[in-house]
Image 1 (cartoon, one colour):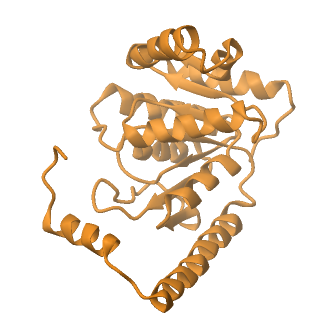
Image 2 (tube, one colour):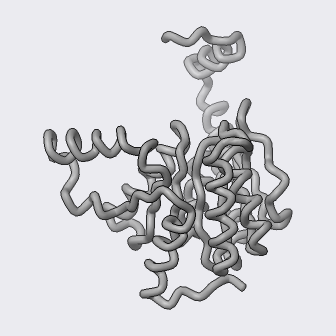
Length: 241
């Protein structure tokens, strides 16, 4: 591994490979199941009544003075003013900007926080009755998709890409009804689009030509909001408030 491991990381690896007695394994697994169930129940109860929402994704590392921060804030505010709630990961960066925009627009501001050793401090713009905390990424991802009627994806890293391709896979495989997936900043996404077009589609044929229609690329907040609202104008989606 190229990255030097910290003492704590070394200890976690050793624990993972240590021999455990079956009663110890069974007990740990049983309690984990209850904890997972509790996270699902808490999420379902808190989010069941929020109405139509859009999940906004992007980097936790985006600074307040970066154009992407302002762009996320504008998109969230305009969507909120149109009657849609905003769901984010509850942390800093793009997530904070989107929750801030939701507050300014007067709409529901949901934060699906995750317990991490770095990068994740809850931002102050979440509605307190919609600020949830998770230990398990997969439970959190269910909430992002289950209660959102659209995705807006701003530039980000591994976590953002994970959330983007989760949404694309669910729609592609018909596990989720088609909903708008909007990627913001064409320049940022251009290298990935080249890979998708040239490698996945043309060279290896690992996706179909129709899969390219699962998402839209835009540059401005008005374009992003229009993609969401135009999609749902066909289905008479009612606003939250």
